[in-house]
Image: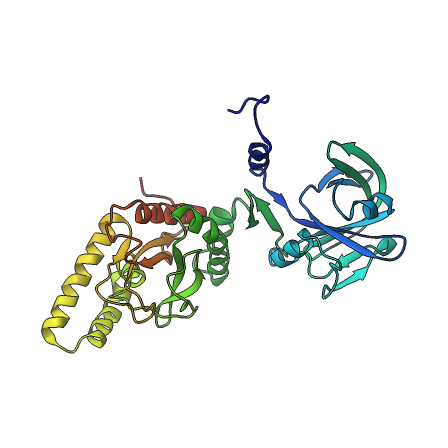
Length: 364
């Protein structure tokens, strides 16, 4: 634990960053009719009766005089698809409202389009707070987009907010399509953080489509395996790590015919077909034993155009059904094919954590 007499500003920032917040753009208009906006996560509610909120701004901000002297401001609570808006207003520029859709609210303060909610406020007080000023506002008008999910921020990264009980409660809906859609949203939101934890390897989220394992989301990472990352890609059941994961953890009655078709389509020579079948069956057996599947590089991948090693772990829903595969692909010279490596083991642990968030429980 850091001593309060010795911690530095960076340590303090990191600790404060563990508190996850929403993201807002606070806007106002000055006496000459010029508009100002700044990204802020310092917003907080104060009182319901009367309706009071607060936010704080650095005294060194170029827009501080406008907020200091204005009587009204708007708290624009950003939606989860407005990362670009947040970044736009976080930077200094001459005209922040160029190409930004908005309407004027109370006191001329801009109300930004597409936000999760808005709070139009009359400033009632301002208090010094070290290198910041704390503005207290009384809410005079509100609006909300209902089910729109808000943007979140923590640990220096943008996040997507989901209910804590989304998995075991909201997704406990049998085999409903709605449950699968919500599960995909939840897992997709976790991919950037998982990518970071694994060491920046390309991730793929796949589901079982009407033609087999189908990529629905790629997380390319800072070291993308290739530029050929497209959704809708249907992968081989017998030769890809993703396909082998589905073969290992889906019911055999679903997979048997499709496996035979995939083997027949990939081999013409009888001896080669026998060899490929034996290799596939061995990999499926190992996948069940280790909890994840593997596809080791034998030649240059025609899709990625480099030799790759790949691993894939199953994601289960509350009913114990495999609903997705979490796969990782890397150039073979960057990631060994060994099953006992820290990367594939961590991948499997992350898939287990996601399964538990969807309501899955490990059998006792």
